[in-house]
Image (cartoon, rainbow, N blue to C red; front, side, top):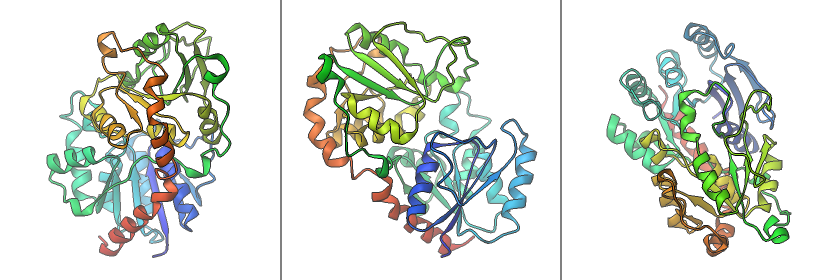
Length: 367
């Protein structure tokens, strides 16, 4: 193998950047093709080449022409890793590429994220059926897609949203709870805020009712989010001295910052039942990487994962109905030893060999 891969995606994505970092450390040359190149906080230093597929608002025809010009006139890549939605990217690549195409179902399967899936399900079916390989973020996600669309499991891989081990801090900060005696929880990732034009997909990130319940118990909530928040245009649905908005910070900073909190929150407003039941989000692995137990609700695969490995509990269940049990240090202390056990195991670096092996398997089979 040449150890060259092309990652294709619509928009910037933490999962892709982490995978690119892990592959680069193993000597791979990773190229990125995406729409509307924007430099994320952690930069594009993981990539050997950056290719723009046009502006974010460009039409399908625009990115199709760009992709065809890239893919059809070179054999430099061993595989093409089609990441993130829309499934149309993989459908188009499958129709033109001479290089094996791997479809990464990612956190957001198209059918899962649309209430009316009648228009988008065919694209998902074609993407997973025609792709030479299919990658999933959880076992539950693979089971659902393989059973629904009749996908051959031999061409699939489950590769979780592991954290980057290189950013796990060896020098944690002092726990804020040791300083003030109060509990401090952290939420990492997108969150629905008021005043902006929120797309329908962001509804599942509306966890403000949960935040209000936690603040009512006297718990500090720290939010790290890449959401655009302009005090002149937006508002936060909760106004409290216990709410701390930290905005977006580089991943290396985030991983060290989170060490000062007591636990991380994984909860979603279940607008899309299937999608949320079958995801294992980036934040869960990054909390553990920062040494934090996970507090979750009844999102199925997350609940099963934290209970199976003893790294947290589903003590936030019931918040959508307006109540949760009392949360205190007894909800996190029993899990700290297991978190320490797994924090260095659930990393890209420890698991990237599995993805390399899968790439080699798919490349050998050809198209």
